[in-house]
Length: 301
Length: 301
Image 1 (tube, each protein chain N blue to C red):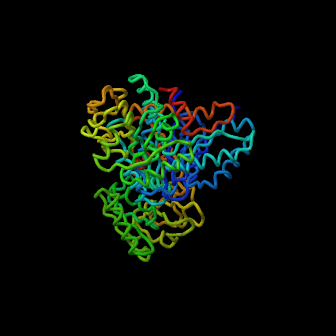
Image 2 (image 1 turned 90 degrees about the vertical axis):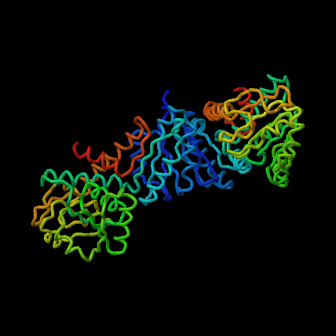
Image 3 (image 1 turned 60 degrees about the vertical axis):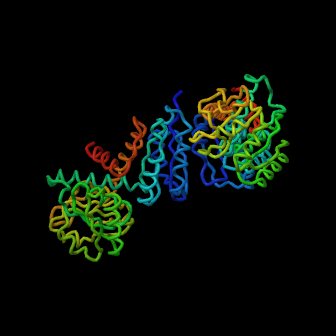
C-alpha cells in the first residue's frame, strides 16, 4: 500500500485558517496536521523530525505548509525550513508558504490585471503606474512586489505616509530581489496620484471604500482596477464583486474592473495547483513568485 | 462501513513531534489529532471525552499516544489515562516521550542479543554503565536493563546529585535497582569502565564520550552500544552501521563488540511501527510503555 500524503501545517498564529485546511484536504492530502504558535527558533527541529521518520518513498509524500498573517515571518520560516533539510541523504520535503492566502490572492489579482491590460488595451505591466490602495497589508505588499517585478512603477498607498514608506522599503529589501523601486505614498494625495495612474489595486480591509466615484472619474488614463474586497460597500466605487473585465461606470477613460469573486476563483485554482504540485517530483519551495507563475497559467484557462 | 481509526496524540510540550505524527499515519491510523500543552491533570478529562463518543466498536478503533520530552511526565500521563478508562469504554495507550522508550528498548535488546551471540551470556548480573544516563533515553535504558537483571549505574556528565536523584526516582517508580554517579574527566570514565561488562552510550548528539585511550582501560567489556548518529560519535571506533563488529580500541577486553546508531535506529523504527499497529490490532485495550517496548524489541532482534 502506498503511504498516505501528510501535510504538516505551521502557523505562528493560534489557529490555522480553515480555508487552508479545506484547500489542503481537497487537494488530496490525507493527513493534515496543525502546529500552532510556531516560533522561528522551533522550525529546524520540527522540520528535521518531519523528514527523518519516513523512508525516501514516504518523504516524497510529506509536505509543509506555512500560514499565519505576517508575510515576513512566513518567508523567514520558509527559508529556515529549506535550510533545515538534509538533501544529500534524500531527506527533503516540499514547502509552500501562503500567509493569509496573500501570496495566491495577490498573484491572482496581478495575473488578472495583466490579462485585462493585454486583452482590452493591448499592453502589459511594464512601465505602468500602479497605485496599491490600502497597500500596507499582506495582499497589497505582495501585489506591489509582483507588479513591480513585472516592470510596473508601483506606489503603496496607506493612511499614514510613514508606514507606507516603511512597507515599500520592506518590499524592496526583502521581497523584490533588487528589481523593484516601490514607493510609499499617503492616502491624502490620492486625488493627485490618480491623474497618472494606469492601474489601481484595492486591497484595504473589507468594507472600506478606497476609491470614490469622484476619484474614478478623475483618472484620465486609468485602464484596469481590481478589488479584493468581497464585502459591501466595494473598495472601488462602481466595481462589483463578480465583475471581470467589466467597464466601470463613471470612468472617463474606459477603465475595466476585476472584482473579488473573479479574483477569488483564480486564487483558488492557484492555491489548489500549488498544493498538488508540491508533491510531484523533486522537493520544491513555493512562495509568491511561484504563486504568480501558476496564477498566470490559471487565467489562461 | 468500518469506522475510521483515530489517534489522539497528547503532548505536554507546545508541539507534537512531526516524527511521531508521521509514524502514526504510516502505522495505519486514518485520522491523527494533536493535543498540545496538555497538563497531566487534564488527561482524565480528555480520555473520558475520547472513550464515550464512539461506542464499543469505535473504541477499538481509537488510540491515545503520549509524547513530550520527559519520561516521568509521560508515565504520569499514561497512569492517569489508564485510571480514566471505564470498561468496556476503554482505548489503548502508547507512551513514547522523545522516542525514548522505543530507542532504549531497541538499544538494550540489541546489546542483550550480542551478549548472547558473542559471549554466551545473559544481561542478568552484568555490570552496565549508562553514559548520558540522566537524559530520557539514558534513564529508560537503565531501567530496562536493571529490570532485566543487570547491575546498572547511571552516569551524569557533571553532577552526582542529578544521577542519584534520577536513580532513586525511577527505582521507586519502576522497581529497578539503579545506582548513580558522575564522570566529568577521562580518568573518571576510565575508572568506571574498567570493571564494566556493558556500556550504553546515550549522551548528547555530537559528543564523543569514550575515546580510544579510555576504552583501553576496559578490562572486561563485552558489548557497547551508542545511539549518537551525529559525528563525532559517542564511542570511538563504533561506526553508525556497526552491529556486533569488534570494538577495536578496547584492547584489553577480548571479544568486545559494538553497536551503532543506525542499527539501533532501524530496530527502534520497526518497534514504534509495531507498537502503533498493536493499538489497532489488540482485541482488548493495551497500555504500552517501556516494558512492552522491550518485550517487542526482543522479538524483533
